[in-house]
Image (cartoon, rainbow, N blue to C red; front, side):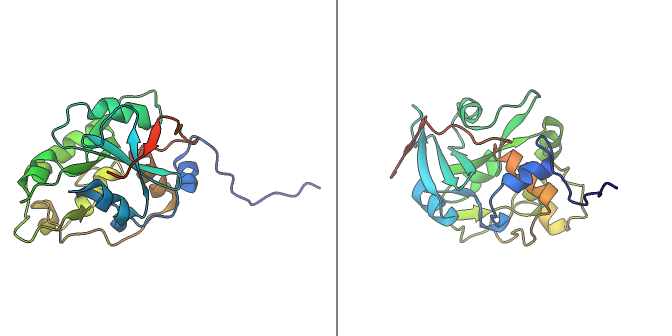
Amino acid sequence: MHRVSLTKVILPGTWRYLGQRCPHIDPSSVPIAGREPVAIARALDGELYQVGRYEVRNAFLVVKNTARFLYVRPGYSGYRRVAREVFSKVPWNVDYDHALSRRIANAAKPAYKYVLLLRVPPSVNRQHGHFEKKDNLGSGIPSICFADDRIFDKWLGRSPLARRRSPVVLSGYSTQNVVLHGLTLKQKGHWAYAIGMGDNDLAIDHLKKSNA
């Protein structure tokens, strides 16, 4: 008589497998934009790295355990090249998109100098475009800001209308509207994919610690 194992096997190439590889990081603790590289790294409790020949003033990584967060200057035209060097390789088309739109980053006073870069399905990226033209920044803009529910949807590869979002969130980005919920294992996989993670650890030989 053969015993039937009830243990659930999670295989490579699945969202749940990638979710298992992702370290426990509260989504609400990850800056989507900031003014200084060191302050962004400190907020993540991670280490700041220069990527190869790219100057930190244009792009840099914050590494926290197996997760790597790529931040770029909103006006930097080479952000796709940097992303291809530090994100895992995939055989399908992707968009490398700023978590906080460049228009909103520059609308803050003072402007946010660096924005988190995400890997997003092209169709999803297009659907979010309309909502990235609006903001409710007001006054007293913090030096670091975090995702709201609409940006969180993009991060997970979801349409901005996939969930019933409040008119306040859909009316434009505000630093007051932060994400307050966690992630399922499958959602962690989507979340990890969007910041460039894959089924295997990525090379670090082209990274150099920075004190910028």
